[in-house]
Picture 1 (cartoon, helix red, strand yellow):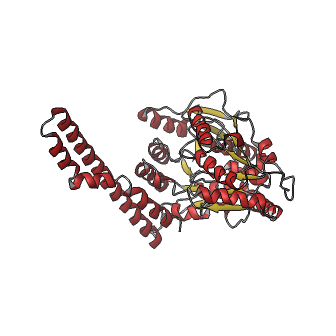
Picture 2 (picture 1 turned 60 degrees about the horizontal axis):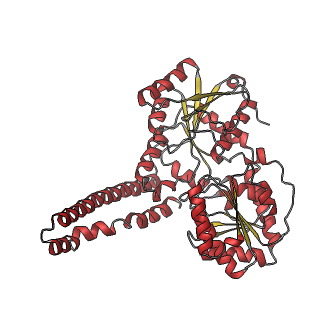
Picture 3 (picture 1 turned 60 degrees about the vertical axis):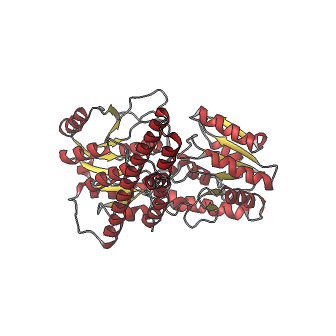
Length: 454
């Protein structure tokens, strides 16, 4: 039972998330808001988007306010919230928002306490096209935070480079999933289930189709259910890919559904193809049902750590993923794998979340401790700086490459010594360097990602 000190009751706490739709982060925010209310706090929800018909319904007595987009109005908004509503703590969940540095700076300047709530892996920005900008955002916000909450002990090492108060928290999935009703699970058939939105970058549903094609080459009777929606264009591309790989008669697309639970109950193995996740709702739901799982390798992921029932394969290796699915569906260790998954769910998800957040609140209200940088902090910061220099070189070479391409276009239009001059430019050192620089940063970023996950 969570005990709130008497002088903390009726304290106003704000949650910020950019929207309040039906995503995993919004679901977590809703559960935390409900829990904080039960603990006696007054709660305000701040969003960037106005309310939509499909949004999660808020508990009674929770105020929802929309933060202005204009920077000047936005800063004044946060100042007014501190002065007029007496907000004491802001739990800022939009950790990668372009508004985040301004918001966090203003919140800090007003005297409100800033809890920077990280929903994903610390390595998330590394391989993104706007990764440099994302790194700058998280670095600025993390240094301003009174407390950083993250989802794994591995990520905590990274965030401790910028803030001394880092708390690892568990997403409150057990609150709404309820008690686990089974002690183990028996295999029913050859059914694979994938759950998520059809996001071609963050969820990579195309890789699920490719992995399933490998599975079908071994087990032709296997069946894949793709649960989710959100992007009709991507769905059409997935259907076309399934036809191209000749598995379309074995793949079912459900579209958006109110709950994935019925599909998880009918499945035999769960498949996740995200490049990275923080604390994936879909995986925790699958574990709650005792489903053995196959995912891409994520060393930071607490849900999957040291669990033989969650098989991890190298990133993008869909052949290994398909063979792992085949092994789960055909070996005689299915019930053992299921039991391991359930044990992991109990160990990770059924924790004292209220105690975790009690620690967060106490740390936020205490005086901030700014100690000297550690050796590990200086090491990783040096790699981040090297990554910044590399990104500068990438941008410079892309600009030079575009300039050379413009020259070629002009030469073609003017038709002056067309062939010789065009070939001269194409063979130039700068053009060749500009061409190869497009792939260089991504390979280097993988190295930096591994270093930040040590």
